[in-house]
Image 1 (cartoon, rainbow, N blue to C red):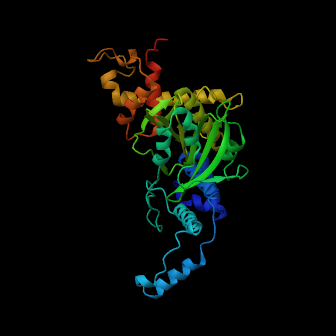
Image 2: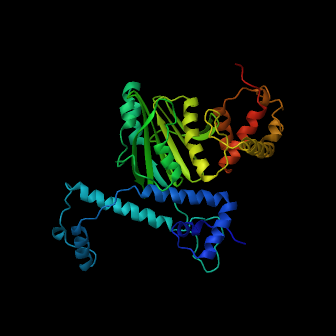
Length: 392
């Protein structure tokens, strides 16, 4: 039985597999969504890493390393030349080279820790996610008033460098985002920047509106884990998009993604409907290119489709509702019945309550903490399907 091919994907991307292995990998990718997502993450990482500036390290660096090695790994303090801290460009070049080298090395490590080892192969190593804290970038946005927040959102996060607009990434959907229309009417893409975290590349896209408003979207491989300073992110469904959101009174952030990509939308005070449109815009661009299923795509944004596409979407939603009903019945049926009609000690049965998407998501997440995001979305969708419609 030919199992997952995650350990071969880096070699596949670099054209290093034998023809027979290429055929096996491509046959598996055609049927396995998990491995397709892993492949997209690798391709995205390679594309973003290609935009990290690479320059030569100063010749004096290796001379000093050799001198230390010749002395058995140590040298008296008075023989070690103090680094030229004022020459920050040289040390920045060293850091950039090391970051790219580390990221490329990480891509060769085996990724799939769920599969048993194959005879004759080394044991699988699990890669820890790269953590990137947006706190230093978010704090000035939180502290600024609405008018001044435009400039704070436009500012670069620490260690991010601006890129030329005509630079091309090796992932076509990202190029389409950069060269195409903005997610919202009246806005335009103002700036493209790139940075990294533990070797994992990150791109920042800043959209502005007539010098008076702005929002920023960070794009990274799914291996990047975003943090938000001291703010807590909780799972929610916003306009049909499953995400993690931060509702700081002075600033709003939404983390979302699909397959091999993870994104973060940063705004000052964007409402849920507008945020869902921006997130849907990015997810649609990614899904169209990677042929991933369109799940809960917001009605406010639609990609041109063939005549047969709506029926496929309807079938996918029906499938998710069936999954949600099965899980809901198994996990909650004893207290609520399969359709939420069982009266509760605390009052009305579940199906007669008016619950927002946010409340549903916050209650579903802890009860299905060991289940996938798709299963959580499915249960949330099933609960919404039998709730009493909210009063207008």
